[in-house]
Length: 193
Image (cartoon, rainbow, N blue to C red; front, side, top):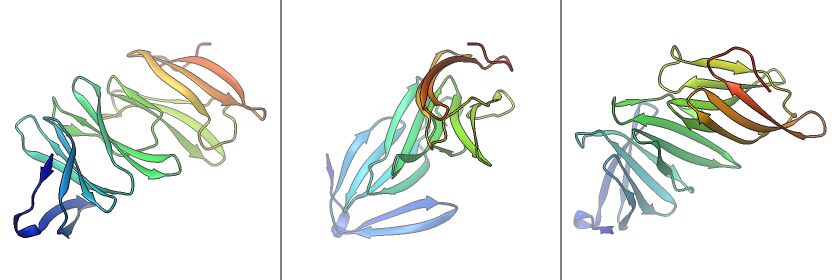
């Protein structure tokens, strides 16, 4: 679907990091994807805009992505993920709770997200920590797991929630990158194998 600009000019305001950036273009836009809660627009020249709407249809967030098209999708019936790739397998995600009209903080390259929980890696002083937390309120859930991860940027092979409190994870371990699979329980401090 093409959207023509009045007098061949597009005026778009994107709020990034608390500041306003004005984009002016005389090219046609293409709506790539549209939903009640979001819209993704190809503005040409590898520039993409996204808009997030609340249940009343009011715009509550917007942004821009360069070179890589943003990916916005539902992780459950009431939560959407705004996935912005920045290259070299690095991406940032923000989650929007459409029911309670709230946004999460931004997460770098999360492993998996579901049931209002997000799983991501934190690299601290030569050690990799797996964190499971409530994406909107850390007070509801926050667990750290110190597994024997192989020394690499992304040792997680796969991860999925089998239910609200259980994560099944396969990861590369040790110096020889052995694949290990574990169940991690969010409601307990101990890991079970």
